[in-house]
Every structure is written in C-alpha cells, then in structure tokens.
Length: 195
Image 1 (tube, rainbow, N blue to C red):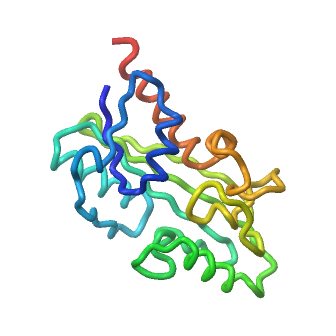
Image 2: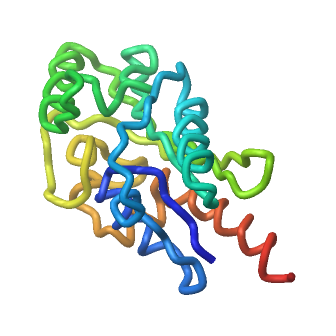
C-alpha cells in the first residue's frame, strides 16, 4: 500500500523508512510535490499531528499520517513541548534550540525530560492516534553526531549515551518515534493483512 508521510523533515522520513515493511511504500511530501508550509497552530501535539494529516488527506485524497514530536522538560513545566522545533525562533535551527535550552537549565538540578511523539493516521473517516514516549534527561553539553534535533543533549533512561551517540537502530528500538510507529504498523497489519 501507499502511505504519505506529511512532513518536510527528511531526517524523519529516513528514520521512518527504516521501520516500514516492504509492502508499505512511503511517499514523502517531496515525492508528492507538496511544498506547502502546513500550519501547526494547535496547542497540543495531537492537534498539530491531526492538522497536518488532515491537510494532506484533504488536498491529495491519499491515505496519510503525520507526526508531531515535543521535548518536555520537567524543570521548565513541560517546555519546549509543542514549540520544540521553533523554540529559538521560526527559523527552526537545532543548534539554537539546544543552546537556548541548555542556557535555561544552567542553574537547574532537575534535568528530567521526555520525548513524546504523536502520530495521526487518516486511513478511514476517523483519525487514529498512536503515542510513543521515552524518558530521559538533558545533558550539560552536546555529545554525538547521529540523529537530529535535540538528540545531542538527550540521554535516554538506562543509557550513558545521548541519542546522538547511539545507532539509528538502537534509537528506533527504544525511542519515542519508534514506539509510536510500532503501534501504527500493528494497526495497519491488523487492518489489511487479513483481508
């Protein structure tokens, strides 16, 4: 089956493609020819994921899913949260976002945080949601070159390395997006393999 992933983030596309079985052909917005900046104006991750999925489903009449991911830091009352990608401004620069976050945590002793991914799937008339989270903490400095976003400063619980120091395979296995994708794939398999 063909399934559109409603994101302009090629890092996310590459990460998700490694999780999909051969019978699902992932179509990126680049392949679809969609350059529209899809609005993310909802106050929640769930709302933003649905906005993006609805936009593509309605415009192209194709089955589609979209995700929204946030980094929630306890000492900052859940910030950056829904504003994670634009934390340091609309230019969406990962280094600027990390630098701002590290500066805000400089005097904090509680560095607990979690990543949360919400996937909205438009396959039928009713949107299905899948949620994955991973607990961890914010390091005091950037470490590692793998991954993207806040990965160089997020150390998952039970590991001595940041996401950016772990292999993509390990990150997918323990990470928020991998957990949400696992639920999505289970749903798709149950919906179609028996038909």
